[in-house]
View 1 (cartoon, rainbow, N blue to C red):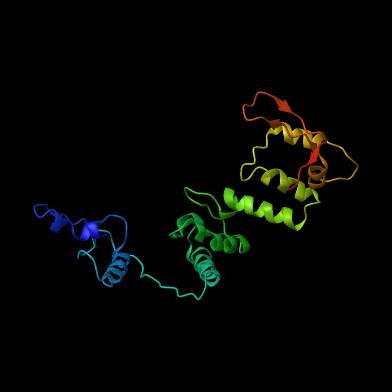
View 2 (tube, rainbow, N blue to C red; view 1 turned 180 degrees about the vertical axis):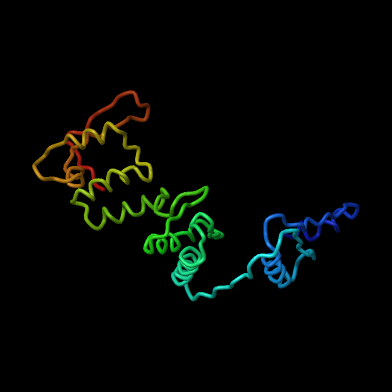
Length: 213
């Protein structure tokens, strides 16, 4: 920001060109933006202009939380679609950061409003979110089919250098009937090689050790 504001002082011979013609928005939207810009104490003065025809007035919704904000958007969308003849495809919700989509997605899903995340993933489809949920599922009930699937997803996250061969051996290991993957993992004997400093010889331990999560 400082580089832009001080550009003419740094380069006194430079010509300043104000790009203030907007080709997309209506005059009502530009007036709302102009009113917000006027509150910036440090700015380059410019007047936003457009050749577009007038549109509808801008509505400001004030909410006390992200949940109530999402619910307000649901009501606005229902008003547009059910009473004013708009299609869901005519409506877009803009937000600053990806993590802010969660409350919107939950509200839209709950109230049967179809949506599409443009150029991104839904909140619960993001890898870091799926990994965290798998950890929680495994912690809550490790000895269950759901816990087995969760453990397979997180056993190498972060990287523990566990390969497919080890996972195949774990699946085939049958120490007893009715054991889930976590109990198998605790019971599976693993021989750990001991490497010399020069790695010239490899020795096996006298007895198998047990892998612990």
